[in-house]
Image (cartoon, rainbow over all chains, first blue to last red; front, side, top):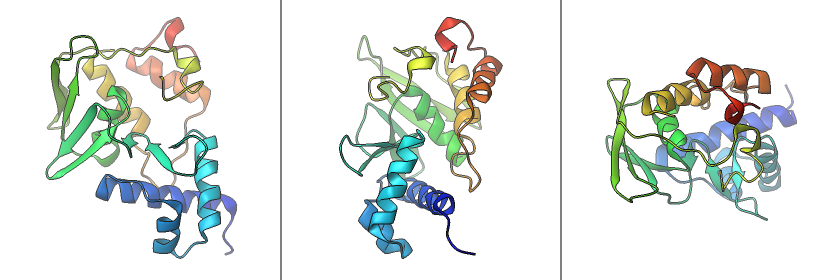
Length: 150
Length: 46
Protein backbone atom coordinates (compact mmCIF):
# COMPACT_ATOMS: atom_id res chain seq x y z
CA UNK A 1 0.00 0.00 0.00
CA UNK A 2 1.49 3.41 -0.95
CA UNK A 3 2.50 5.75 1.86
CA UNK A 4 -0.07 8.48 2.46
CA UNK A 5 0.74 11.84 4.02
CA UNK A 6 -1.20 10.71 7.10
CA UNK A 7 0.68 7.44 7.45
CA UNK A 8 4.02 9.20 6.96
CA UNK A 9 3.18 11.74 9.67
CA UNK A 10 2.17 8.91 12.01
CA UNK A 11 5.40 7.05 11.23
CA UNK A 12 7.45 10.19 11.94
CA UNK A 13 5.55 10.87 15.18
CA UNK A 14 6.24 7.34 16.44
CA UNK A 15 9.91 7.64 15.43
CA UNK A 16 10.29 11.02 17.17
CA UNK A 17 8.76 9.75 20.38
CA UNK A 18 10.75 6.51 20.23
CA UNK A 19 13.98 8.49 19.91
CA UNK A 20 13.24 10.99 22.64
CA UNK A 21 12.08 8.26 25.02
CA UNK A 22 15.29 6.32 24.37
CA UNK A 23 17.79 9.19 24.46
CA UNK A 24 16.08 12.27 25.88
CA UNK A 25 16.95 14.04 22.64
CA UNK A 26 14.78 14.81 19.65
CA UNK A 27 16.19 13.76 16.28
CA UNK A 28 16.73 16.34 13.56
CA UNK A 29 14.73 15.76 10.40
CA UNK A 30 17.95 14.69 8.66
CA UNK A 31 18.80 12.14 11.38
CA UNK A 32 15.31 10.71 11.45
CA UNK A 33 15.22 10.54 7.64
CA UNK A 34 18.55 8.72 7.56
CA UNK A 35 17.59 6.25 10.31
CA UNK A 36 14.24 5.42 8.75
CA UNK A 37 15.03 5.56 5.06
CA UNK A 38 12.90 8.65 4.43
CA UNK A 39 13.41 11.85 2.49
CA UNK A 40 14.61 14.69 4.74
CA UNK A 41 12.18 17.14 3.11
CA UNK A 42 9.30 14.75 3.74
CA UNK A 43 10.31 14.45 7.40
CA UNK A 44 10.50 18.24 7.72
CA UNK A 45 7.00 18.46 6.24
CA UNK A 46 5.82 15.87 8.76
CA UNK A 47 7.39 17.85 11.62
CA UNK A 48 5.52 20.94 10.43
CA UNK A 49 2.27 18.99 10.14
CA UNK A 50 2.70 17.65 13.69
CA UNK A 51 3.40 21.17 14.93
CA UNK A 52 0.34 22.54 13.11
CA UNK A 53 -1.73 19.80 14.79
CA UNK A 54 -0.32 20.84 18.20
CA UNK A 55 1.34 17.47 18.74
CA UNK A 56 4.90 18.85 18.83
CA UNK A 57 6.42 22.33 19.13
CA UNK A 58 9.22 23.51 16.85
CA UNK A 59 11.88 26.11 17.51
CA UNK A 60 10.52 29.30 15.93
CA UNK A 61 11.29 29.58 12.23
CA UNK A 62 12.87 26.12 12.04
CA UNK A 63 11.98 22.46 11.63
CA UNK A 64 13.88 21.69 14.85
CA UNK A 65 11.88 20.06 17.63
CA UNK A 66 11.74 22.01 20.88
CA UNK A 67 9.10 19.91 22.60
CA UNK A 68 7.43 16.63 21.83
CA UNK A 69 5.08 16.89 24.81
CA UNK A 70 5.30 15.57 27.42
CA UNK A 71 9.04 15.56 26.57
CA UNK A 72 11.21 18.61 26.08
CA UNK A 73 14.23 18.41 23.81
CA UNK A 74 15.73 21.42 25.59
CA UNK A 75 16.64 21.67 29.29
CA UNK A 76 13.86 22.98 31.54
CA UNK A 77 13.19 23.32 35.26
CA UNK A 78 11.31 20.00 35.26
CA UNK A 79 13.50 16.91 35.20
CA UNK A 80 12.01 13.42 35.29
CA UNK A 81 14.09 10.41 36.29
CA UNK A 82 13.23 6.73 35.99
CA UNK A 83 15.94 4.15 36.59
CA UNK A 84 19.02 5.33 34.70
CA UNK A 85 17.02 7.44 32.28
CA UNK A 86 16.10 11.08 32.58
CA UNK A 87 14.15 13.53 30.49
CA UNK A 88 13.13 17.16 30.64
CA UNK A 89 9.47 18.18 30.56
CA UNK A 90 8.10 21.56 29.42
CA UNK A 91 5.93 22.02 32.55
CA UNK A 92 4.65 20.34 35.71
CA UNK A 93 1.65 18.75 33.96
CA UNK A 94 3.98 17.29 31.34
CA UNK A 95 6.43 16.13 34.02
CA UNK A 96 3.69 13.76 35.14
CA UNK A 97 2.90 13.11 31.48
CA UNK A 98 6.23 11.35 30.97
CA UNK A 99 5.59 8.51 33.46
CA UNK A 100 2.02 8.40 32.10
CA UNK A 101 3.19 8.12 28.48
CA UNK A 102 5.84 5.47 29.05
CA UNK A 103 4.14 3.73 31.97
CA UNK A 104 6.90 3.91 34.56
CA UNK A 105 7.37 5.18 38.08
CA UNK A 106 9.45 8.35 38.14
CA UNK A 107 10.98 11.01 40.36
CA UNK A 108 10.31 14.57 39.32
CA UNK A 109 12.83 17.29 40.13
CA UNK A 110 11.16 20.66 40.14
CA UNK A 111 11.38 23.88 42.10
CA UNK A 112 8.67 26.18 43.36
CA UNK A 113 8.08 29.03 40.93
CA UNK A 114 7.82 31.51 43.79
CA UNK A 115 10.28 30.38 46.48
CA UNK A 116 12.72 28.38 44.31
CA UNK A 117 12.50 25.61 46.93
CA UNK A 118 12.76 22.03 45.59
CA UNK A 119 9.42 20.27 45.26
CA UNK A 120 9.72 16.54 45.83
CA UNK A 121 7.08 14.75 43.79
CA UNK A 122 6.66 11.90 41.36
CA UNK A 123 4.99 8.58 40.81
CA UNK A 124 5.62 5.49 42.91
CA UNK A 125 3.86 2.16 42.48
CA UNK A 126 1.63 3.89 39.97
CA UNK A 127 0.47 6.57 42.40
CA UNK A 128 1.44 10.22 42.50
CA UNK A 129 3.12 11.68 45.58
CA UNK A 130 3.89 15.25 46.57
CA UNK A 131 1.79 17.97 48.12
CA UNK A 132 2.50 20.91 45.82
CA UNK A 133 -0.09 22.74 43.76
CA UNK A 134 0.39 23.10 40.01
CA UNK A 135 -0.36 26.61 38.78
CA UNK A 136 -1.08 27.36 35.15
CA UNK A 137 -0.83 30.96 34.00
CA UNK A 138 -3.10 30.87 30.99
CA UNK A 139 -6.74 29.72 30.74
CA UNK A 140 -7.26 26.44 28.87
CA UNK A 141 -8.90 28.04 25.83
CA UNK A 142 -5.69 30.03 25.22
CA UNK A 143 -3.06 27.35 25.99
CA UNK A 144 -1.86 27.30 22.37
CA UNK A 145 -1.96 31.06 21.74
CA UNK A 146 1.63 31.11 22.99
CA UNK A 147 2.41 27.61 24.18
CA UNK A 148 5.92 28.48 25.33
CA UNK A 149 4.46 31.03 27.75
CA UNK A 150 1.67 28.68 28.87
CA UNK B 1 -4.48 21.67 40.45
CA UNK B 2 -3.23 19.24 43.03
CA UNK B 3 -0.54 16.63 42.36
CA UNK B 4 -3.08 13.76 42.23
CA UNK B 5 -5.11 15.82 39.74
CA UNK B 6 -1.99 16.49 37.65
CA UNK B 7 -1.25 12.75 37.58
CA UNK B 8 -4.83 11.87 36.71
CA UNK B 9 -4.85 14.49 33.95
CA UNK B 10 -1.44 13.39 32.66
CA UNK B 11 -2.57 9.77 32.40
CA UNK B 12 -5.72 10.71 30.50
CA UNK B 13 -3.90 13.24 28.28
CA UNK B 14 -0.63 11.46 27.59
CA UNK B 15 -1.43 7.80 28.24
CA UNK B 16 -1.79 7.04 24.51
CA UNK B 17 0.70 9.58 23.11
CA UNK B 18 3.23 6.91 22.12
CA UNK B 19 0.62 4.52 20.73
CA UNK B 20 0.48 3.97 16.95
CA UNK B 21 -3.17 5.06 16.73
CA UNK B 22 -2.85 8.14 18.95
CA UNK B 23 -4.86 11.19 17.97
CA UNK B 24 -5.28 14.44 19.84
CA UNK B 25 -8.59 14.71 21.68
CA UNK B 26 -11.27 16.88 20.12
CA UNK B 27 -12.31 19.98 22.03
CA UNK B 28 -15.31 18.13 23.45
CA UNK B 29 -13.14 15.18 24.46
CA UNK B 30 -10.57 17.49 26.03
CA UNK B 31 -13.31 19.28 27.98
CA UNK B 32 -14.62 15.93 29.18
CA UNK B 33 -11.14 14.97 30.37
CA UNK B 34 -10.81 18.20 32.34
CA UNK B 35 -14.22 17.66 33.92
CA UNK B 36 -13.45 14.04 34.77
CA UNK B 37 -10.34 15.22 36.63
CA UNK B 38 -12.32 17.89 38.47
CA UNK B 39 -10.96 20.83 36.48
CA UNK B 40 -14.07 22.89 35.95
CA UNK B 41 -15.01 26.56 35.83
CA UNK B 42 -14.22 29.35 33.40
CA UNK B 43 -10.43 28.82 33.53
CA UNK B 44 -10.81 25.30 32.11
CA UNK B 45 -13.49 26.08 29.51
CA UNK B 46 -12.32 25.43 25.95
